[in-house]
Image (cartoon, rainbow, N blue to C red; front, side, top):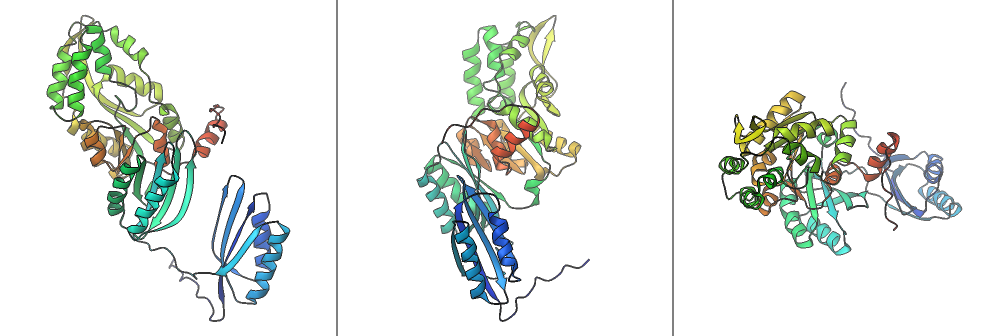
Length: 412
């Protein structure tokens, strides 16, 4: 079926923008549209927001009849509703350009007016326009989604990353499109991402060499050491640790705040999850079962006679191995690599973050933040969902439907 051309307004038609504001209550939008329908208008655009029980409704219409009579009728309806109204000349059927459209998601704790001023000024300086603003969350972080047009997303990302660093907030820029709303594969690092802390250091505590292992781990995560060499050197220090210590380590693990919320919410939407770790299968396989994660890949510690031998079995999952696992899991799920989201914090996550459609540096080392698509520096893993366009209200509604109680928001 061929596409139909957009309707062309008659030469004597008027394009008007009707904007109402006032206390929100049921029936306002219906009353306004009912009044407009009496004049046979064509609705070109319609948008409304409710902010702290205050409604702002905008209706862009073309009217072929008596525009003055329509204006008077709308003003009478607004007066009856005890709302303010403005009727101005509109902008016809023009639309935002199809090219250069992006979602700019801003996260802050708190999110100050000066920070938003810096972000919006940077967008304007790039020659872009903000077409719509939507609040995604007010706690535990404030998340705002800006629909932007007129600037190439990559260039916008570069400019906004500088301003975000100056304002000490997080900003993510993603090209607008249907892919953002589709089913995706989420691939996560484990240590210091899905969980708090480093498992190898927790095991090392049972061998009395935690400080020594921690120092090598930190250097490896900063990219100062070859990951495989550093891993084998650290694992060698674990020789003789009883295998039973791994159960104690698992019991002591603390998930990142919001980890369970993110996994269960996105699973309901059909998302698939994978964890890819430079850690150990003895821990990651149990995590996968506990959280309902579909795929897991990590290194395997060798155990002989109930003790760690200080060796790993098979090929080490390193920086390149993580990226390869992401591609493999995407193929198994049946999604394009562009539909993957990778989350990590260390240098050995860089290839995985680069391979994904969206690479997120989560509370990451400086070199990782600089090279990832975006960075999230708040201690709540479920804020990742805001980058996917999911609101806090939607998350809580899904939990309520499943009988899960979520904490009440702080008082405004």
